Length: 311
Image 1: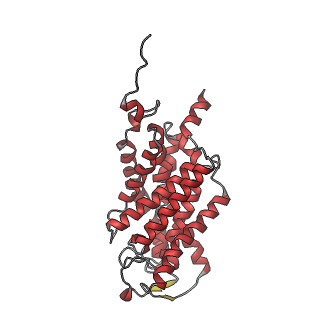
Image 2: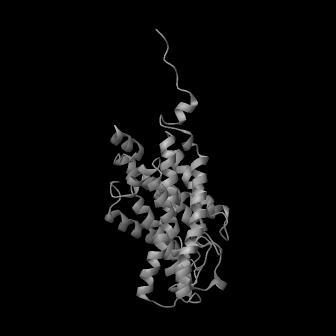
Image 3: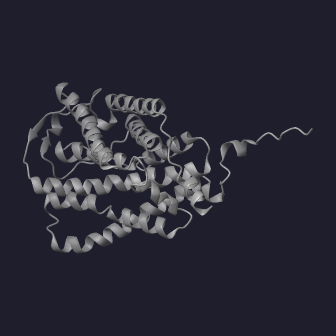
């Protein structure tokens, strides 16, 4: 009786459907191309808007800055739709994924706002920052919420909607997809002003949190909303740096001259680059992992589903 052949390291690492397209660097290169084409298309699409709008207005400036990322949505959807190889990913973005519901989208908005607001109020109470009320313009607030959602969701499309799914296709261990796309997500922020080791770590951790939500609860809608709410809260509502970038328009004004670094605040990067943010996001990761395990939530395998439809 012949001995059963032991699987090789390669076979243990990769799924049966693995091809050269799934080698880690291939989807990473595609992500870089996404970003390059997005920037070009976004700038082209903003030309007519810049021609008719007052670009000296602070509201217009920040609106166009965020909304220009609509180019990413267009490039992404065209590529995924045209590429037969990648087309199964579309099901993870649609209501076909059980977690893509309006309820979880709204929950994502609440969670993103609560996470960021907790960090901000902690910094205020500790005396690290001083904020003053400036204005409240409801219609502009809605337009900016929409524009920020476009920008934040475009990053989710690239990392949790493409890179994560492509790594899940070729690698058996889901943590390769979870950690892999999170590190690339953080690397996309490497040239942001004021980036430190701590702020880089916090970006990786929040990306892991979002990836765990997608893995256990099949809801990229939640992550899009949470990401947008986080950015909108700190950058537009409170006027704080968003990953080091300061908004030209906000509803609260920061007294930057009195801001100080602490456990709760980073002068150059904002609340993201702090110990508190890292700890808070780690707690969110653990809770998501625990809930996923407790309720035995199976993750959607878009590739297996596509193969079943072919059979």
